[in-house]
Structures are given as structure tokens and as C-alpha cells.
Amino acid sequence: MTRKELAALIDQTALGSGLSEEYIRSFCREAMAEGFASVCILPNMVPAAAQILSGSATKVCTVISFPLGMDLPETKIFETGDALQKGAQEIDLVLNVGAFKSGDYSALERELSGVIGAAHAAGALAKVIIETPLLTSRQIHEAALLCEGYGADIVKTSTGYRPILPRSTSVEDVKLLRSILRRETGIKAAGGIRSVQDALRMLAAGATRIGASCGVEILNGLAEQPPVRNLSV
Image (tube, rainbow, N blue to C red; front, side, top):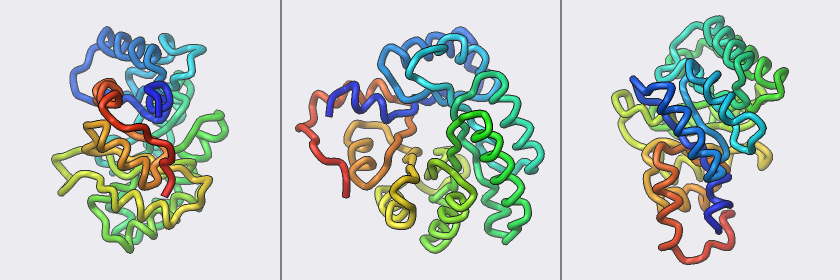
């Protein structure tokens, strides 16, 4: 696997508090130069990112209801539409895990159909974050199929938001998702992926995207790895 091939599988992420527009513009230029799949940024930075990345292969991705996912469906749908209008090309929706655990499928239906529908109508990719570290294996199975059933293009493991999570995303999470989802449904592994070894293990388990805030460091570590010829399981 080459540096360029690996970069095209990474969503280079900047979701920290207090990041300036100048920082995000520089971040986007670096991501574009490396050929990352996308930059994953907060909604208020979408216009700046869209301006820098216009016409490039690196997409503008933003998060909806990050990091807790507890906003009302109508709020999530509005936020999605606003981000799309301002230039977002990929949407990472944080599922309302509280509603899921409570069996509130009416709220889940509204947010999933509304957000995914809006994304697809705009020609954007829809990813749904299910927070695997907060779920049992049975709940992961149910949540993954629920998201896929509403048309999610990619099911994402986690926000990686440490204050609420008991652990990072595991290889076992990704393997479980790959055993559940259709081949055409992607898997984004995110949360605690900090090295090229972490990234390659997730890809080998079945991930099709990697979410990381240290994408350049991951790419820099690739030179130390033996050739990887087949990442499928």
C-alpha cells in the first residue's frame, strides 16, 4: 500500500474546541496536498473548508450533533441542510444512542430518514456514528442494521469522544460490523487510531475509511511497514 492509497482512505479530522479559521484553512491545504479522502470538521468551518477544497479530490465532511448525538431530530435535520447548503459533501451523524437504548424508534426514524435523505438529495455521502464502545454486541448488530436500513452509506464506529466513552474502537468492533453489513455498506473506524499499525489493523478487519486526527503521522509511519497486499478478511 502506497502513501497515496492509504491517504485516500483517511478522513483527516479536526474537531477540537477553539480552532481558528486560519488553522482550518491551513489544515485543509495540507489535507488536499496529501490526498486525504476528506477533512472532518465542525459545521461552522464548512464554508472555509469548501472554499479551500473546491474542485479537489478531498471532500468536506462535517459532524452533526457532535459529540453526544442527543439533539432533537428536527435540529439534526436543520443542521444537516445548513451544512450541505454551505458546501459539505459528507455528513457524519451522531446517532441518538440514548433514544436507541430506550427503544424510541420514532425519534430514530425521524433523524435517520431526515438526515440521510437530505444528504442523498444533495449528492452527499451519509455516515452514521453508532458509538460501539457504549453498546453490547447485540446492540451493535441492531444499530448497524437500523442505519443500513435507512440508507446509510457508511456505519462509523465512534466519535472517539473520550469523556463519555469507556474505551477506544476495537478491531473486534470492526470485524463484527463487517460480518453484519452488506459489502456495499462501508465501515468507518474512528476513535483511538493513532498509528499506521492501528490503521492497517482496522482496514484488515474490514474498515473502508479511517477517521483520525493524526493522519499525517499515520502516513509517515507507513514507510516502516512491510508491503500490505490484501486488506480483506
